[in-house]
Length: 142
Image 1 (tube, rainbow, N blue to C red):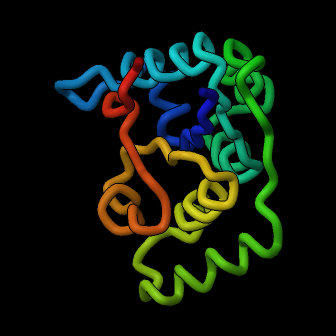
Image 2 (image 1 turned 135 degrees about the vertical axis):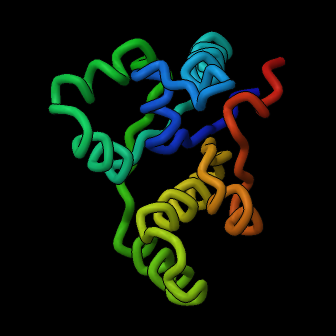
């Protein structure tokens, strides 16, 4: 059965930069997850918000390169005005303690019935009642 996943910006950076947190191979976890999605025919949602965030760190050509190995699995989505409004409402409810872009990721994933893939503590701890949030290494690779 095909599943939908929405990897956030941190996951794409972990993969591309082959990052580590001092102990764990975050880049390897991200790569294994993304490769599994491609092999199993699962959908990787990439929003305009993720692309915009990546462009803060990389030029446009590098951003394209980040996604190039997984093109067949990627479905590009745009955060609609309705989704942005919903995210702003959630953001205000939470006393603006979270970055608004993080809440937009959550709302977009929810509207596309996707599992949000992140390692952002705020998303894992505070917004998991809105959408399922998993770290790449916590996805069951069946």
